[in-house]
Image (cartoon, rainbow, N blue to C red; front, top):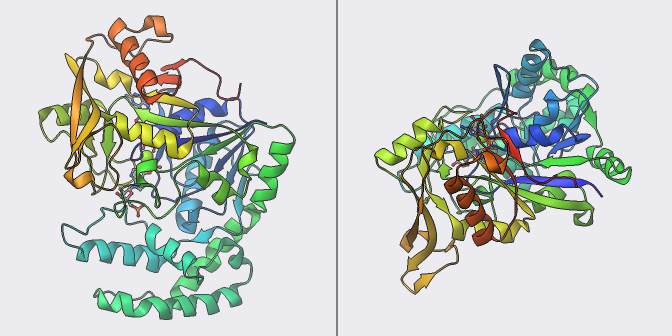
Length: 427
Ligand code: GDP
Ligand code: IMO
Ligand code: MG
């Protein structure tokens, strides 16, 4: 068996794009299984920076097939734009990009409602979504009135569904002071996009199953992060899909027995974009320093990311709900120049001290820190553990021991080569 799931172990933007791109060098199939264009996965190759939102990060490696499975929500306009941008940069997608007919379509009213709701929400209820229509699209899926990629093959039937869905949302849109998009205009847009999407349609669950059975190397590319997971994240400040490793089975239609290994990605510190609890957040100059040094601005929305220290109770919780076999630690280079690095090791709660992540009571929990010596050297030219200063090596070893999960890879810069590979993901 050679199926590996890679997920975000924090609040997203851990560097999944970079790590998936690295492991794709030896992968045959790369599968996105959850989320949609709320994701922004950055790939840096030479002097080119490419941000993919829907297309799997495997697209840069010409020998990999890329699959967008039914757990995703797909904005057809964004997908076509993304494909065109990739083609324009010389990355061929034809014949190697497959989209599930069962994936749900993000439609103009989903984006509209997402934006209107965020604008109407007050400080306590605002989620800080990416306004890409993710929540309302998954709501339609759960309400069993969603419109799927496969519906593009029958435009008359699609129109009837669009009329029904529009009727359901119209009062909501009116209540928020908006105006529902015209069905005619939406049909014209979908009619024009259909010929671009339909040739990509495949039974992706069968495709992935065949690849796994044939012993091919299959990589499942998580989106968002575990603490944004609908069931296991910091609800209600979460996204609307399953970002955890189990989501790969649900969203791609593969059995859990087919998965060989689960890897989680964490930065050497922590970030969050959007609202919601972030106990180790630094709201001071140090936080700003991490933001600038790490280039912590959203790849989709450009919003400044909130920054803070790494949270060990959270990472142990994340290791548990994902069954992590390994970690990739990214952005270690960003910590260079700090005289000390704080690490949250436990929480003070009204019930006393705990080393568990108090996911249910984060509002009343206070992080307890331990200080670690920092290092002054730049790390970007390190390619082996021995190239790292002793303090950086000790920090990695400490994370491994206290989280209880071995480090498979350390990343010291955005580029492919700025990587210290320690263990083989598929080995
Ligand atoms: P993703 O959503 O998990 O794929 O992460 P994003 O692409 O949204 O954000 C991660 C950012 O950090 C991107 O700009 C990457 O190019 C960059 N990055 C990834 N790994 C490293 C690293 O080890 N060091 C530095 N300095 N930047 C990194
Ligand atoms: P990648 O895959 C970081 C956050 C939003 C908001 C919450 C809900 O690049 O790591 P949504 O638009 O999904 O309804 O927003 O989730 N969020 C992300 N934060 N990285 C992401 O994706 C995210 N996708 C959603 O900021 O707090
Ligand atoms: Mg991102």
